[in-house]
Image 1 (tube, rainbow, N blue to C red):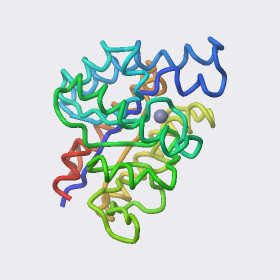
Image 2: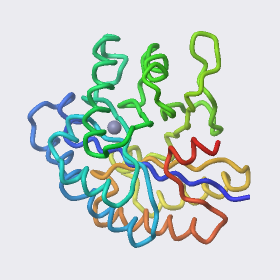
Image 3: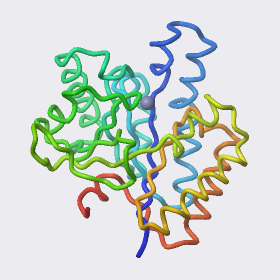
Length: 248
Ligand SMILES: [Zn+2]
């Protein structure tokens, strides 16, 4: 058995901060670091390790930083919708939510020239309508749920749909360690290795959520590199999210 490893990167840009601290450079410049600097460091690492990954991109970020999106696509990575703004959908009306998803998909499809199948809700806060909207728009996967490690098809209006949920986890998210808790990088590597070993033992998928503005920093990229090297020594298959969905 091999463990599917999904490296996912949420390219939020400054919009993740604009909603909390609008116009304050102390925060917004940290966000800009993602599409301006961090993403290129991550792409370089993925090229070196010959891994194709999944980038969930905020619509406004895709409009403001075309070079970053083009570089991601040029390297063969998957791109997925991550809202038009970075507001959780629980803060939007159903109309705003649907319009934002559609608009962002159109923006990304202009870059790829191909259909976009994946979605992750900003702040991992879907509304009660999110799965229904995604199903109606023919998305194949969503990635917000933390209640299990095992992927499952979402139930919509009482019926199992074909919208695959790829679970995420608080402990497999770089943001919490580095921004919220100030965890030293070496400890983050330890936690991720232990979690990977456990997923391997239990034959679970390993879905890591990293952010270019967080892990794209010079010290933190070395942690991702060490983790990738560790996982490559085991029975793993690195996959893009839609690849994983199609073979599920
Ligand atoms: Zn995000």
